[in-house]
Image 1 (cartoon, rainbow, N blue to C red):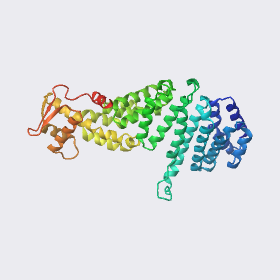
Image 2: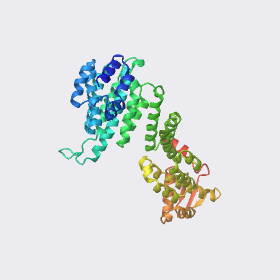
Image 3: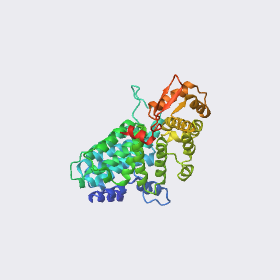
Image 4: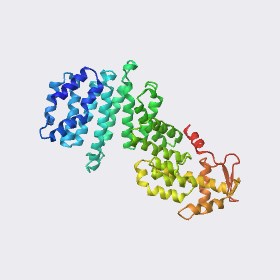
Length: 420
């Protein structure tokens, strides 16, 4: 531990943020003190909680760095030696707060890698503590209010680091603003875990309209990819499918080829968006990209087969719920209805007048439950009011009169209006 702290101290003296992160790396600590202690002749033994402060004070010459370093290693000891994840999280939260106040506020951007590493460490420790928190039945305070979860508690600390980054007024080449986007991405990960789309939207709007941060395309490409991925997912929740498509395609095109799992995740969300925009992946594409869950949905959506669409949605419900796309795909049934009506229109040789009874006959063929003429009228009314179909209904004559000019607008054009 003495040697580790001395090397860490030398990295601080050199103002080498990346090297500081190397010595702070929890995997480095784990290999040294956990895996190493399991060997027959261990090189180092795990320091005790009480000894850490003394070791740090003796071997770290930079006084303002001592508190957060002490808290950091105590967090790792709680985690690896005690398996006390709540205490580990609390110490890690203190680590980030102390580093922000004592170091980050007073230094230039050589400290950006450290603030990013510690923020990510807090997020990961928060995930471990969150599991314990959710399993604990005593999560109410004396007044009966539910206590804040670890992930909720981590937000203000990371926000403080973000605010410190943004308010840096120094020369841009040395500015801590270059650390801001990484912190935004950490916050968005937390907000998604907490299912707080509102806060995510505000954060994305702040970045996209900021006049103080550097242009987005000047940040490291990996950070841009992460931001666009989350921005695309939020756009899905907002029903802004054109923006979602643009952001997710950027993320896919620029995601490193080695990150196969990440690419597949992006493609899954893109597949959902494309369904809404009237682009249906073929069976070959689904097989190529491992989108087995979308094969049935794509075919059913294209052909207007509601029965098959709902069956495919039910069969893969767990998968879609896990990825947060179930509700969107359930709402996409309006597109299936639209495509069914379009097929009826084509069957009638694209006549501008269609008997509602013809649509009812098609509905009876693809619906699981009994349907009536009222149901058919209601669905056509919804399609017209939402812009999926151009025309009007005559209830008295039981006829749908379609516009002679583009009665079924392209879905891409329809959602372009929504995005504006």
